[in-house]
Image (cartoon, rainbow, N blue to C red):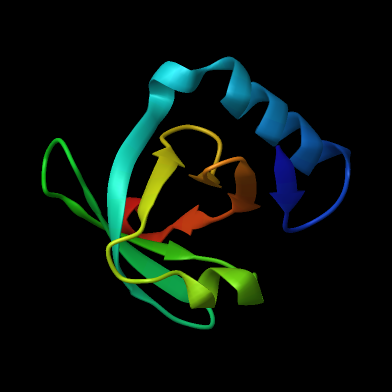
Length: 91
């Protein structure tokens, strides 16, 4: 697993907690990606999620890319990569 995003103990803990609770990941498909946010649609419900991020690499995600959004810890999983996100849809 590779972690990208903010550094520090709190972030490392969120990644570990997210990986320890895999049932809370929600499968999604990317529909748009930009410099500071991406939009994904949840596979099970069709609900759209807007996720803010500070990761240039996430702007490169292709439309249709599969991802998983952790419902509790603000972690986006792309394969083995983990990134910090803020779900703006929940605000």
